[in-house]
Length: 89
Image 1: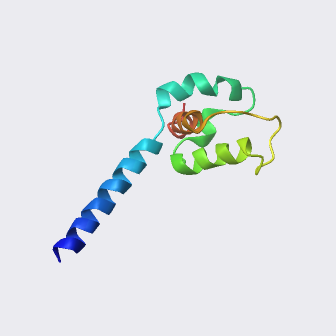
Image 2: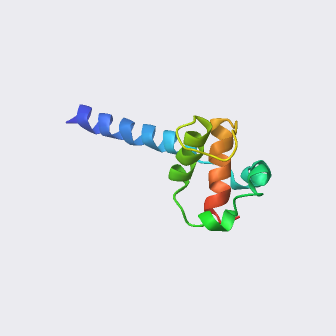
Image 3: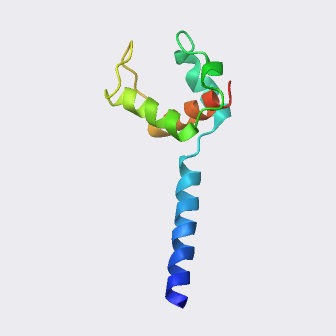
């Protein structure tokens, strides 16, 4: 029983750390999203799930999703832009 509790606690802590590591910085995203502003209004994404927005941006970068122009951003930049957009700018 002790092993099961320890395993559950470890799993919960790992999920917390991973979730926090993927969270973006909306303030940093504001600057990084300036290049997107010609076509994308942050208010259009207000209230959206940050993780889903991050994945959408990664899919565009990876060529999985069609986009007007090729973009190159790091995973951290994608998370920051997604956090900014999800906050509604």
